[in-house]
Amino acid sequence: MTWIIGRGGFIHYKAAWTHTADVAEALDAVLEYQDQRAVMRWIPFYTERSAWSVRDRARFREGLRRAGPQALADYERMLQTQATASRGPSEQVGSRVAGIYRPGEEP
Amino acid sequence: MTNTPNDYNYTFFEASLQEFFDFAAHAPKVTTRAPSFPLEDLSTGQPIDMSALWDDSVVVMEFGSFT
Image (tube, rainbow over all chains, first blue to last red; front, side, top):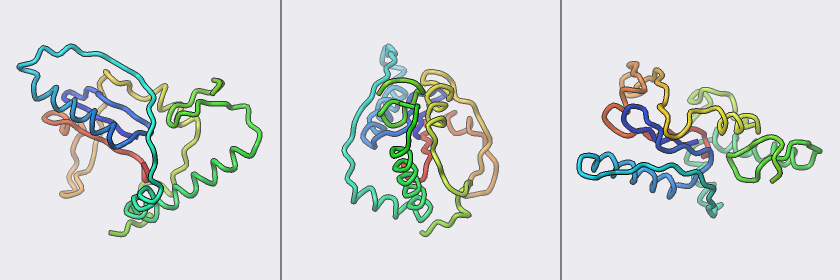
């Protein structure tokens, strides 16, 4: 989960699962906004969106190894939990977008 | 650097659908103000409020061991 918080505690960005490029783009925008507040006539807007990324599995595994054995163990446990859940019957059908789960919604 | 289980504040991470639902529905929303909470400066061991960090600069918070 990733948060970008500006001055006064203003929440600019919130994500459950995301991509580094998405976080970087959001952070660049926040920094530009704060740097140019005195000279630009900013007009705020709000969006919600879903997005996609392509995972480089080898690089992802390397990132887990760099994070440490706890990260590796947590990830393996998550995979096992998901595999078990997908085999069993369940009335809970949530969104297939990672990070957004609303009980009862059709995927 | 090799992390040990003692470096984390939980035994193991287990995400449930309900937790993700709670995050989406009940966690602070974008365009609202984040609550402040006490932190520990790891370099000094001194307490510091979260709000002190965003007084002068932008804060990026990342949670999760494998995100």
